[in-house]
Image 1 (cartoon, rainbow, N blue to C red):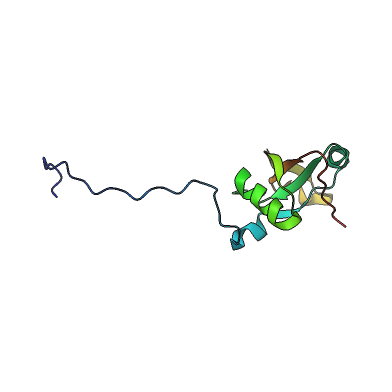
Image 2: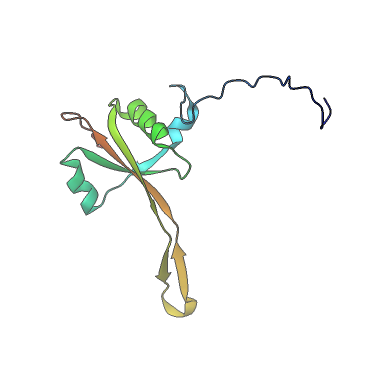
Length: 119
């Protein structure tokens, strides 16, 4: 078909798969959760059913929910994502200033009665 053709018959496109929907056995889910986030604020949140994790920067809420379900056997009620910016850090001596890497964390809210044990 030419660029300026009057032919309107174009091939139909394949349906697009929904973003973030992964198979339960996807190997990428194993790497979505980097580690649990242990801080004073995060530990207070666990008393209310909110758990905090460091996650991959490219992870979506659906990816994180699927990874939590696969790793811990509980279904999250809500997943919220937070991007933490890089921070300037003073280095000792004459080395000047450096920067701490930016990080991404997820707040995972569970249904009442569900818990995650890290030990």
